[in-house]
Structure formats: C-alpha cells, structure tokens
Image (cartoon, rainbow, N blue to C red; front, side, top):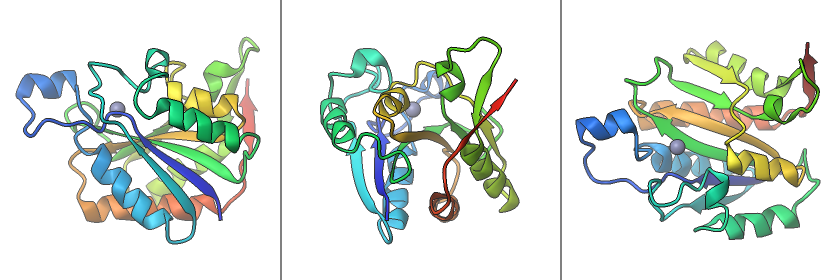
Length: 200
Ligand SMILES: [Zn+2]
C-alpha cells in the first residue's frame, strides 16, 4: 500500500467555456473529474489524499512557485514533510486536463527530473515514467512522456522532500470510462519499483 497524494491545482471551472477561454485555457475543465476517478480507483488498494484547489488559476496558479503559500499548498507542504524520503512508498500525482484542440493526444505525462539535473548535457529520464507511457500506448491510448518543465512547482516541491511525483494531463474529450481505464493502468504501474536512467 502506498501513500498517494492527488493534487488538482487548476480545479476551479466556470460553467461553460467560451471559445477564447479554450484558446487561453484558464481552467482545467476535466481535471477534477479525472482526479475523482483516480481517487476512486486508487483508494481500493492505496491510501489516497486528495488536494483540490478553490483558487482560480488566473488569481494564483498553484502549480507555480508564486502560488506556494496559497490554498492547499501549505497543507501539501506539511504532508510532504511528514512523508519525506519515502520515495518508493509515496507519490504525488498532479492532475491536469487540456482541450483536444491543443494537443492531439489522449493523455501525456511529465516529470521535471531532466531540468533538475545540474550536469550539463545530461537528461535524466525516469524509466518508470517512460514505462507508464508505454503501458498506456499498449492499451490503445495515444500517450507520450515528456521530461516536463522546471516551472512545475508541485512536482518540484515533492522531489525536494524526496517523494516521487508525476504530472498527468488528460484530454478533456475523454469519457469517464476511458479515464477509468487510464487510472487502472496507473494503478497497475504503481505496483512496480521506481528508478531513473540517464541519457547522454
Ligand atoms: Zn492545469
């Protein structure tokens, strides 16, 4: 049984997106729906802790360092301190969503390990994360793994306390059934070990 923190920093959504809002993507329209399904699936065999933002992204972006003192972030910091160094027993899943007009994929996953490696010319790829994208593809989803960006504040903070972290982006057109299938693939993946590889 693992400790799983499910974070939804961009959960606040207005009822109906306007066309220009879709272009700007001010809200993650499907993130809370996906996070609730993820919580439902993972809580069967793991201890889950759901953190849902009540702050609109344009007020304070909780996935940026300037949002670290806002909303659920101080509570998240407290939990991370409590579980620090539990790299293989704990993981933070930072849940987001994107409009299908933005990216032609069902799901993509990111960590930002590559950006945190100080050695020039090295990209650290999490082989476990790569395995997850391969598992998603094997199950018929269009998926990819990206090293991510250094601005991903929630994953960065988790890693600061030596807790594994992963950002998952869901296509907003996915049905509940498809999201559930993805969450089950994540659940199976969580039962393996975690290690990193270095690509030069
Ligand atoms: Zn987001």
